[in-house]
Image (cartoon, rainbow, N blue to C red; front, side, top):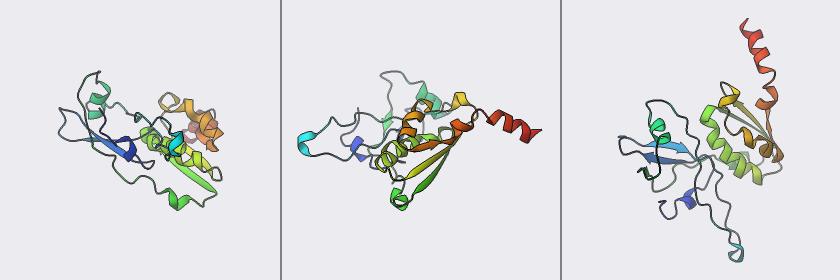
Length: 173
């Protein structure tokens, strides 16, 4: 059960939420992947508030993230009382005409939140996403790339995917 106000404490892309599994002596901090809730509209048009957070968890054998992935309905997890961190300081790029965003592996998680909240609101900024992964099977959020591109985000990695194996062979040989 979420604590009252926990969802509302998600104020900026790039924030985290701490989790503690009963057998773990320390918490793990997961970047919130879901976009932050939109600002509240006029009282007469209140939509249903967001009801959950979304996370991208990379399973690493023997780590708390693996135990988190193995949880079953009804298992106990302690969740922090509020979201942690200030998130990305997007005010610093508010006047930028082009923004380059870099991510690797599961580090795309807070970038998803950034793209789907901040950049969705700011149509005047061109955004280029450079996303590195070991292989296409490990590339998270591929199903979202078309939507991101419709919001003005150029996902360069997908365009390079066909050339990448040839380029890698040339550079290694």
